[in-house]
Amino acid sequence: MSVGSNHVINFVSQGDDNAYLDEKLIHHILSNLLSNAIKYSPQGGKVNFNLTCEPNQATFEIKDCGIGIPPKDLEQLFSSFHRGSNVKSIPGTGLGSIVKQYVDLHGGTITVSSTVGVETTFIVVLPFIPSSDS
Image 1 (cartoon, rainbow, N blue to C red):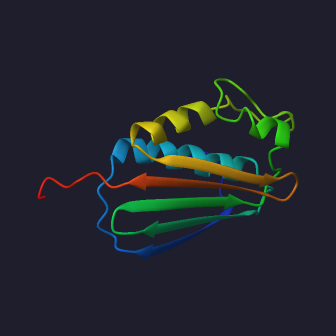
Image 2 (cartoon, rainbow, N blue to C red):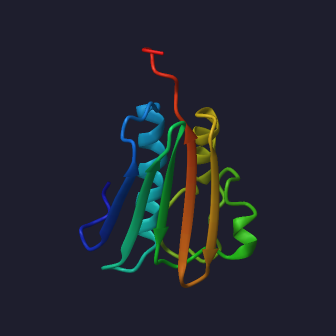
Image 3 (cartoon, helix red, strand yellow):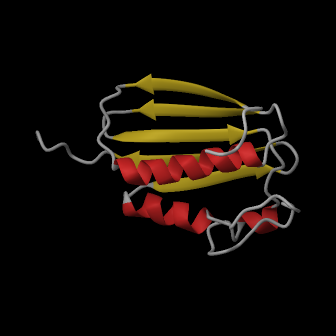
């Protein structure tokens, strides 16, 4: 990610680490969510990234301390080419719809909660792909 080095990502992992997920889809989902969390957080900001593996699914929670998403923009967050009304000159393309498509392709869910000027939290829940050993 080309976002600079002035941010801290706190990563916490819990549970069984034998996850069967589509590596390419996971890369696209997480790189977009993490880069946005960093991009929309102040310099020196912290991003919390929690991974919880359960017997049949993985839950990824990414929480930033950034500008937040206004309620009217949350309604359209996963629409193509929609950008938040408060992003000002921060570059971006509104990739929320692509992340949603990747999550859907994996049979998962994505939710978001946000408070303007405080934080935004994305939670992605993905079911495991059955292993070829099963």
